[in-house]
Length: 517
Image (tube, rainbow, N blue to C red; front, side):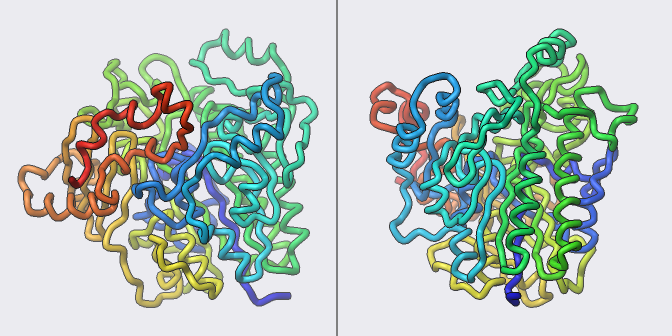
């Protein structure tokens, strides 16, 4: 057996840290994730991105998502055509493989780091790169094995008629919907009856993932491996086969709220399965387990009047724009407080959109069970992997290894952590200063998070020197153009789309005004 550490990275989808009991959730418990925190480190200042596709690319590449043209991603939904009689698999692969991804010729991805150290690499679950992929792309990103979805849009359903295993279609008996059983809708008794009458939802995707995760670990138990599990859970629309026993008797929750909580508890069960299997195989103390989310909280459910309406409007009907009216628990009636008291949610650059749960169980950690306030970013994972496995990190990456934190050694800090958002970029320094640029209104906001974690007091007018310092850093992070800090900047656009007026220049006609020039 090898002396190399195994690494398992469990990547939740749209999971606000307030949805975990180890971060303060009061309506239900997540015992298996809590156990990782009790036996490892729970980070309080961890940042992902504001939305999923950039977060996944950032994780795999080791870059923050405010750069100009570092990477890009294609449109979602194309694989539905295999069910509806559109393009063939061969044509779809050709289209995706020939879409410009802006990668440098010598690019290195997260799985490449593991492979250089001799680890077998596997990915099970949602596609690791948005919004559509191919077996050729997955191989290029360093995966020896893959099982799951190739299309982000199909991940909005949890009953896929087919998935993919190393490029081969695997049909799922009993799942009959081209939409993978997606049920985006408002909650009504009529809607529930309609879904139930449709049928065609026999096999839940997370159950399939669990089987493949177990098979991968058992197959490679005698050699070092890196397993990445990007789950769909708890991304909406809310869908589970049944209410989880952990919330079945939660009197304070509506049925839909119980179902949303059940999605998180399904993921917690997967964490428990992985932990138990590692223990059974004698691998627990030679495996680093990371549990994180791609972005902050999202309200993936609607409830009766007066409760959460999907997080897009306040309970009194005002539109939340993340500029003048920010999402928070009280305004939308979110019974869960899923963003842990912050302002903002998925898509926006407020703390609730980008601050994520991040837990690391590292064998031999002498400070296990503690809360760590070290500021880390999603894109630090590659640097940490390289440090752990003794692989040289390419000098052009943005990440900084946080392994010294886990080993009680001196830990260098980032000068800042940067991330994009739907209305513009943001930057946070280790001492708690934060700047946002709101591209639609060309306005800066400046906050001091230790005194204002909900970002309610804009200090831009009171602190002009600090604002200039922070704004300069933000513009530098955005490679001289604030537009690069909008996540749409990374969409791959074909010539025909530009001619049709659907490219970023058309969508953001003022983009050139936000440049350093």
